[in-house]
Image (tube, rainbow, N blue to C red; front, side, top):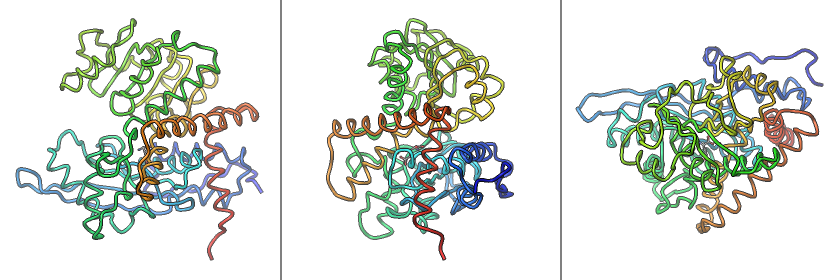
Length: 429
Ligand code: GLU
């Protein structure tokens, strides 16, 4: 029986203050009616299955001892090993990591991957640590969470502030502990130690496939399309690159230090080389520096938030000047803003679909590591495109037939997959 009145499972006290967790919760509750979920099932989905909080002592280069707080949350263990990134950012806390872990469950569900949702993080600004300090931090964190990770238990991957090198240190620490080489304990590793060709570019490519498909639906040619991208890290920079390869003009880009605008289109290879040389994005000579808080309001066809969460809010949603929002980041749009965008007729490709290319190629990497074989980059990209388009079309069909937003349809598909598996397995004892 579906709940007769809206039912809100209690929020555990530690998560009460978390805007991210409350947002993930309200998104989950938005599909209760669509899926006819009963209260007991909703309760089983509304809490993380397992959360671990650790303090991570690190000897800094100057001899001081610093202690950092780390988290690993496994939202679900229903569909396979927990899967999800490890984030290094000062804002990381239990609520944010729990929300991100829940989103990973729905993301893996939408993509039909044999994984449950997980996420981890350390509250740290990685730019303030030396490479040696980062290595000690990562290895000690791995040691602290060792009991709950493993290729069949919980498989980490890069996220904001972490990269291939971070994964290599985790893989090495884990392998040393168990006594043999275990590349399948993490994904997003360097290719020479079992990483997958195309994994680094996968999220940005997936975002691009979704955008091209949406443009087709909207009847807009890529040559007629402009894009504004917030974030020039892994996801933002690859998305810019892939979009510009297809003739889409990138007219503004922002990062944590500032924003840059050029209505004629920014030269992405030149900007990438500029930033790689350690120069500031907004000082790139072929464009004008602009106020970062105005970036999201810049006129364009496609707006790609590919950095932080909760940047499209009740306050600015009415000021967006785009036809399409493609969520490269996790959680960039608040539920309030979602309503405003819906009323304004702006199409949103939701995070759990739009940025799922990363975890999809992580799945390819895990499979190759287990089978000890290697796919070509063409094979990887081809399979990624197939799975992304297939998911995009399933979400679009549900949205059209049930008159739902793309977000509600995507969440409904993801949650439904987990619920079906949970019900089949039953409740122990
Ligand atoms: N951190 C990425 C995400 O949020 C990738 C996760 C993975 O590959 O496991 O989807």
